[in-house]
Length: 88
Image 1 (tube, rainbow, N blue to C red):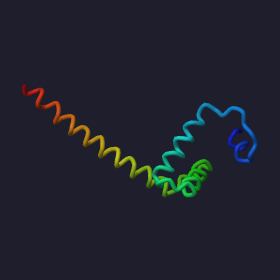
Image 2: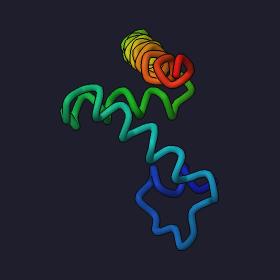
Image 3: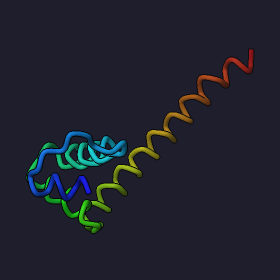
Image 4: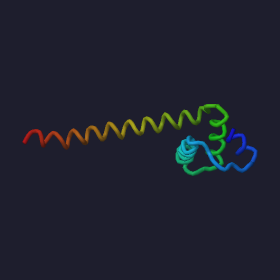
């Protein structure tokens, strides 16, 4: 398995097609932890080991809440922009 190879420091010529998804998960964690690569790596390793740390769940919930607020705000802005055009 390629992760086992990477874990033991062996060179891997070709990574599987889903490898970029793991890069995005790590990037998400790193961004949420404001660039703290030590903490991000710790959480990411737990994630790869099949664990779902409470801290990672908290990060995901906060991000989801923030994105929902942005979507709701966008919907209100959009409706305000459309409404005058419909009245004309």
